[in-house]
Length: 191
Image (cartoon, rainbow, N blue to C red):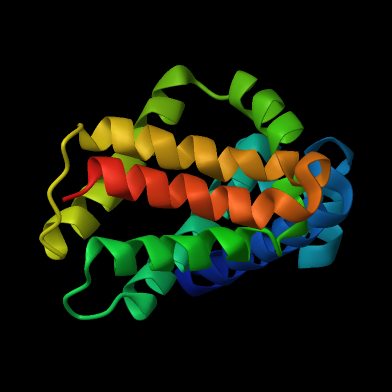
């Protein structure tokens, strides 16, 4: 018989699973991370895992979203009160360079393809819509104007975030290349 958890316990266990997932993702990648290992680290049984997540993929998505929320908060903390588009670009650069420090980001390209294949298409579409909404809030809050759709702008930043998987190939010039790309996007598409 499955143990019932209080709402508070459920929240703490989900948080612990996501923390464990982030660690394992960085060390092992998605494929080599097992539900059993995550449960052992979180201190729950494998059976209890399925009270929280229907699949390993959903845990990885929640973990990714949790990390993204951390970076959304970082955007707010770093942004000056009335930023220029150039200050906005500098904040984006700081955030993107923080991604470089995350070991799991280097594994993301291979892992993401596998994870996305196992998720329903509407789940993926809703996630992208959420990203569009987050960027829309920032643009509106700080009074920026765009000369392309927020959807297209979000897509450009999404592609930049995926470029981190090329960091080992590009080498020393990766950071400079990324900065140049962010500057070009901001210069051309934000007023």
